[in-house]
Amino acid sequence: MLRSEARVATASPRRYLGQLCKHFGHKVPASCDGRLGRIDFPFGPCELDASAEDALVLRVAAADDEALARLEHVVGSHLERFAFREALEIAWSRTPPAP
Image (cartoon, rainbow, N blue to C red; front, side, top):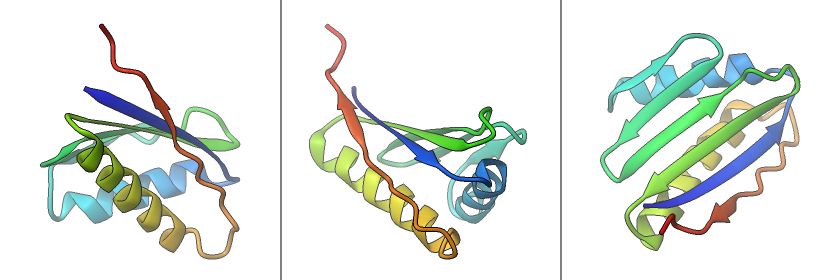
């Protein structure tokens, strides 16, 4: 599996975690407990972490580069749309696959 992570600075990480999980939960399995969330897309999972008060951490994983890029785009673009009042910087960092 290929992995990518983005740590997005925001004053409202829990709000965006809830919005993302609720929005995608109408289409795919999604869960959240206020601090942690998971969205199971057909092309790979997204884990969300709002444990910090000043950032939302997004972690995605996929079998190939195309699916990973799709996850980054879908999750990132929806977060930007929900956070239109903030100028969020979403910079994905890919990690090498485990041996």
